[in-house]
Length: 345
Image (cartoon, rainbow, N blue to C red; front, side, top):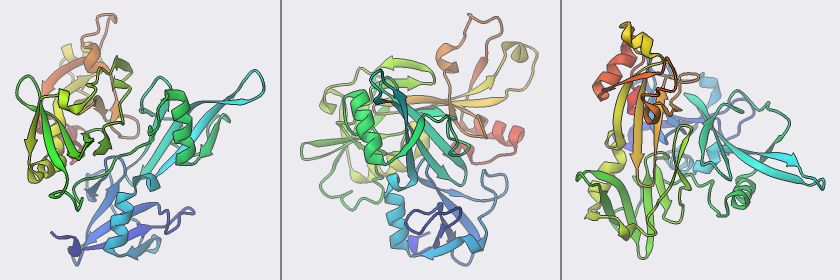
């Protein structure tokens, strides 16, 4: 289906405006098929039975927009983000910023992330249920949040959300594309260069980031590994690819999933033949990776460190994992939770 086959709508409710809508929707013209724009992974997701969003909103909350405005809303990722800073009172009475929370809302979930001087963006439940929080949090602009994190981390740009390359007009133009190759010959990252400027593709934020945007740490759940990053992409084993292949890799989310596991909260349950209770997957690409568990809080993918710790003999009844594949993960989630499409995003 081509873009002209869609009708686009913004959702206006709870004080939202056409400049900053609550959500972006589209329907396949004359079909009744609906999709929503997810700010969790910056993609269009289907609506329907057994999916995380089962139906579109009421028509009286929707306002039609043209495809150009819809494209602008997709490209402006910061428009969908809100920021708060936590302050503490210093010994001289000055307020001292301690950390930042970023919140993104879309129809399927409210995603809140926490960052400070020592941690990269990590999923948090603070502010996930509304604006009420302990009185130490103050709403700020993206510029103020970035300035705060620059002081805490010693570098600017920590609020960067990346940008999609799928609709980049320069895809076949001035960019040159490269895949980084791992020790076993597989693709471990995606890079592009325009002149002397490098960008890498993040499989966590699903967008392109400047090479100067360095992850301070590799993060998996609550475990942190120091990020031993190359000082320059050319230190990697890079293989030049064409724009069409780069487009395929950016569109293929499964190519960045390194593994799936069935998860039991207790090894005793596994030994007793109980069914697993969740799925874990590893998402990995250039510069960072993450292990995620589903279903987490409010049926979301959430960070976990169970793969890193398995088997954790420090506990007498540690969690248990068994390897599976995409089909096995999807079948389990459909059978156990009557959900489809979860592994697609």
